[in-house]
Image 1 (cartoon, one colour):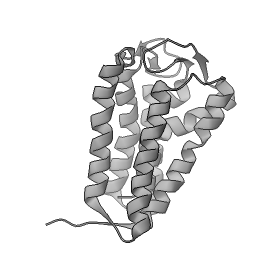
Image 2: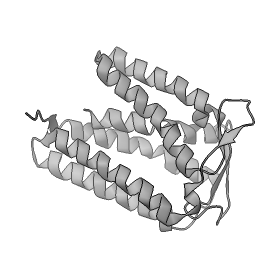
Image 3: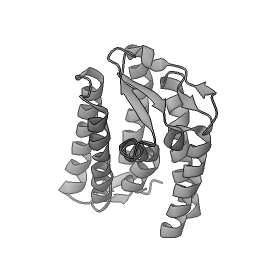
Amino acid sequence: GSLGWLFVAAQFIDLLWPTLLLLGIESVRIEPGATAVTPLVFDHYPVSHSLAAVLGWSIAVGGAYLVIRRNPRNALVVAALVASHWFLDAIVHAPDLPLAPGMEARVGLGAWSSLPLTLAIEIPIFVLGVWLYARTTRPVDRTGRWGFAGLVAFLLAIQAGNLFGAPPPSVEAIAWVGQAQWLLVLWGFWIDNHRRLQIRN
């Protein structure tokens, strides 16, 4: 499948969130030590991260894919990936994920309270994603091989920085740096031009 579209789908609500921060629609606080993994306290993000909104976004993004690519099966995969982000967040977040805009009830199992537990959850998911894409596509040139390898290394470096680096200096910095995620989407589409689906018997 398209790595660019996979990025858009899997990260859509996190791609949306920085813009909502800049517009003042959603809010977050920086509190070093808030969890073992992140210093961020998510006060208000019902548009990007409530369950009801995420299900709506999954339909919208899946529908956009269907209109653009005319592939119903892959459109369902895209929609499912958008929705899956919320359920994976619910495992690691503190109880801060709203069920719907305006509802007080919030959920989260809090795996971020433990760095080893977080790594035990996130590393296998990352490895599985890399393995699946590498297994189902093949490079058609050096760019397809090394562009993908470079992306994997870059994602690992970002995650290491998030886990072990200094807290961000401000909410505005979080929001503007968050916009750079769109460059990863473009990187994914660029790699798509240098890899092809691999049919296995």
